[in-house]
Image 1: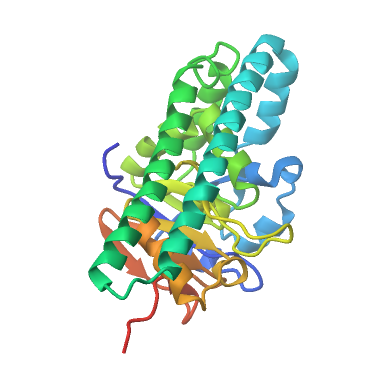
Image 2: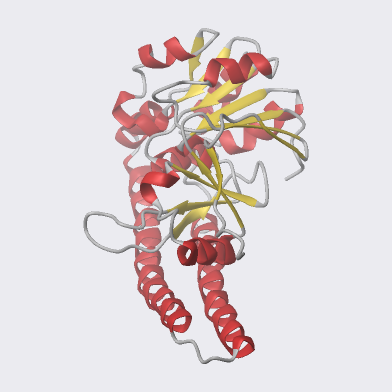
Length: 312
């Protein structure tokens, strides 16, 4: 995919102090503005809270509602979709088993210092490389499974008219907002209706795309699920899927302070070694991307570079 020429606005969670309107106005956006709220699922059409945060009247792109309608009306498509998702879930189950073992191996290597720094570092790098290989394999497996079901998506005869309607709606919009919510549902619906295919053209004509929380996560090279201390016990970050790749080299972690041990240098060091550049997005985070330019307009302390502090 070529590098988009429009503007991406990567924002943190919008509560308690929304910065969506300010970011859109500063970027020179204009209305109408399309909105994607599929991550809200059954609340997709409840736009009253979003209207308060937008400088323009929203045009809903109702991906979640369309999906439910298509699934209800076309049993053969629903069956194919369910089979595809069953394969994804089976692959992810095996990935998690291998990931858990590899993650524990990294932690044990980290704790088993030999006193020879070169040996310790080489062993740790090898152990992390296993994690990286598992992550790459999981992302590729998602691609391969989708490729095995080419008609489950915008090329299906029942979905194509809705894809065309989506393209027509987007063509009337000068800006676009992608809200947060359930990140897997959001990414799934975007791909199902081919919005990912349309975004390149939208940005090529100079569109402004603003996204926050889960909406921001899906725009990058990979989507990583993360929670260091969930109620059910320890958890390892895992690759959900490949993202839309509208920007490169960075992975996004909304609510990082709440969901990651940002005060644990060892955990941050492992996160950086495994995923590369990682940014935490808190309320007030605001990054503008134009081409290869990356401008930080965030409130102090709201954009976190997730890397361990340098040793004194």
